[in-house]
Length: 196
Image 1: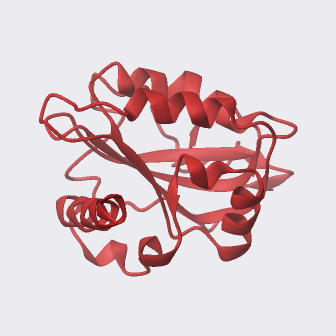
Image 2: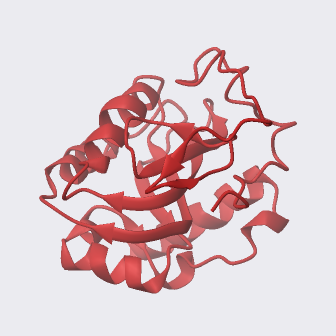
């Protein structure tokens, strides 16, 4: 797992440590020391701790004017034991929502498992984004490129009632796009789903 890095090619466009509004503002990264681990497996120092021992993340890009954020995750999404959705909602999402973000792209290629529990935090998050932001965009949450077995488990716990997932959101070549084009592609897929 230590060889899996968060996507870094957009770092010149957005750095969460330099963004004064980011929950990770001011964080200093020591790329020579591997101190964080998931189940005893060290992870790359570029991943950010959000309160969970099994799920780490990286803010890849935020556009405050358009009201969207792109986040990447690594580890095991475990709501049953660690209540990962609570940590994500309280420590990251509530902060970003307060800044006018209502469109969330969650990249889950490195999420290896999902263990569900009750869906109340997902429902709360869904209700929070279900408004028009300052740029006039309706809110949504998109789970992009999660493994099929992870999506199956999320569906077993009704998470797909709150997150758009699967199908056309399995975007394997997202790294070839700029963050703006990636956002536009995801937003188009969401709009198609909403208009059906």
